[in-house]
Length: 255
Ligand code: PEP
Image: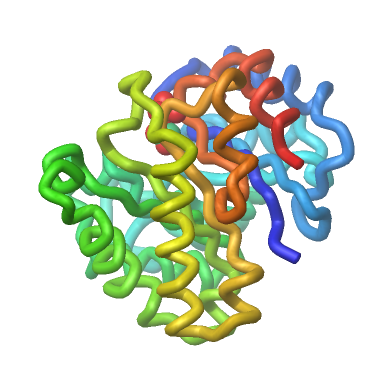
């Protein structure tokens, strides 16, 4: 049985006090979700500066703490970077990698992402690996190829055992922060495509068990329809994860 997950990516928003309040508000209202073993999961990814303090106010059985990025190197003279090992040491359980903002503004490539994925796995955390096409790529009909390459160049370099720990998030770039959500049919089409790729690479059982999230202007009003699709196993949420009511409204749409 694959796990349904709703993950909130706070990006570079909230100061520490606001972040703690938001985490507390979510924690109070999340019910039976279990970060490690339950059939549904709630994840929050605050900025690096908030992680330690947020971890103090959440129940790790209800909410899984995630970071938004990590370094490509293990340790050493890399001023300003945060390593996977550091994240692990403060209670982080998952790391978002390959978000389109990082690919676009910080030049992340498949090569750098493979290093990060490996370090996250080495430190026994879960990579939440983002993929998705830009508007012009969709308009040219290249979205399947773009997503296939992003996945093959990183995730298909892993062993089956490593790949089992990865959560995939399909996030069409044209839908992120734009208010323009992919239709549930568009999401289902590409999620089914991704699952087929996984099937061909790793076999039926791993494909059936793989959690594939949708991200891009997901909100309480459209979450039910999106999550109702057979191959959509929850969402990666940006803007709507910054208000407890909206985030809870989306979590409640998880089956
Ligand atoms: C995201 O950045 O991962 C995202 C899905 O953002 P939003 O929900 O704001 O579109």
